[in-house]
Length: 118
Image 1: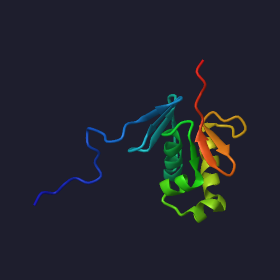
Image 2: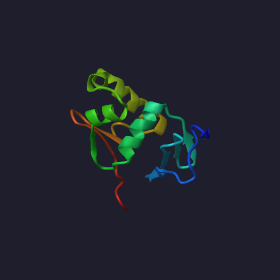
Image 3: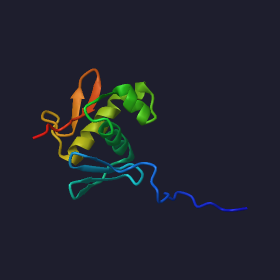
Image 4: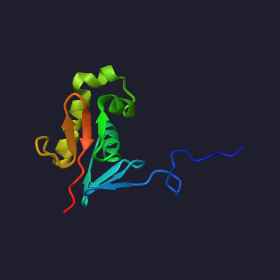
């Protein structure tokens, strides 16, 4: 019998680190850098950020975020998703009224903001 190591990541990572705007999001190790500043996120905040950032400019519905969080939609409508997004914005120093990262689309969901080319 051969014992296989558990919880080890192979050298050839199946999921690449996501780099968008000034963020670097590591899905496997759950690390986030904003520029050179590390950002500590809860596991749920990390899932929300990665889900949004992996589809920049695309509206991600409440249902899609609930699925990513492995929750039913009824749980999402009790404002738990809004709390995750609010906390995430605070940690990213993002303003809901003038978002750099996460835009709210009332009645639809959220969208990762795509910075305009200059």
